[in-house]
Length: 196
Image (tube, rainbow, N blue to C red):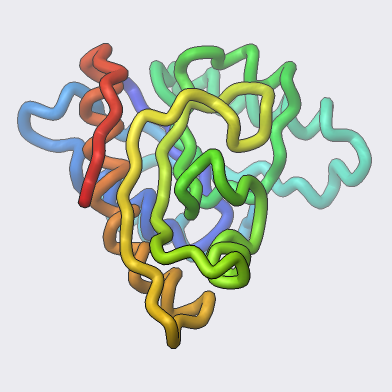
């Protein structure tokens, strides 16, 4: 059984969908939810699901990313995770951290990668006049939002969409895609998952 640690910064909606999927014959179980934000709503949601939680507040480490990441690694390694899932974790991680977990870390990103790496993805897709948008799950590498794509879901971008309405249409697909990719990944299968 694979041990999964989930990193969050906010409400944890993707964390909840991941955690709730890891039941029955699923090859993994959640062992830790870590947040860099002490007041993140996802921490209470994780506790309600019976998952251990921990916080490494990034603010006291201002300007010392190495010390912040050393604290992250200490907390994570104590839980002995086989897989790390970034689920709305809003800190850019250094190559040193990523290499520590090389081949074991997944992220969900709200665009059809390789388009729109970074922030404001939905607004950028609409500004470009794209007819579709979506989300991607990828393996984390040192290149921001640049690792191998393990799954994508596509949704139409409508003429009257705002970034907010598009994000709301994409989110249910994030909640389906990420668990599907994690299930495959935990079985050692990197075949990409595609949702319509």
